[in-house]
Image (tube, rainbow, N blue to C red):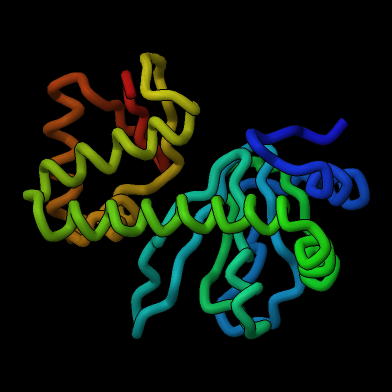
Length: 207
């Protein structure tokens, strides 16, 4: 049975039934910037990293969690990916052919409204990142970014150990700092007992 999501319309459930979720291993490249966009993705479980090549760097833009969609920007025109996507953990997701998804959304205002809601949440997260970048010291924005990621990963902001599948270099790119400086601050947070560092992941002891 396909997973259900808050406020999702019946037409989305119908698409899930037609295109069942597939499982992808950790570090599976789903698409790269510059490639032709053929699918819209809906994550059922796990986490995916979205990044964008900028000159010689590839900064991490966001993490996509269970119940979140990406590829919805294809509704605004164009069929070439401007970003790259790679699974951060073992992930189950639906891959809807772009034309099928667009056809369903064109027929159902509720589905289009749900897509707009997903896009609105993404814009809010980008605005949050920009706000932290310009108004907080590095220590503050790193701590708040970890709290935001932990809250999204476990669906609430209350208790529980949460694993964020990012390297220290990827955390640095999210907060606009160098890996060396970010590593120094993360080690300070670990000594305070707020996080635990492991290879390829940051564990937040309490969201």
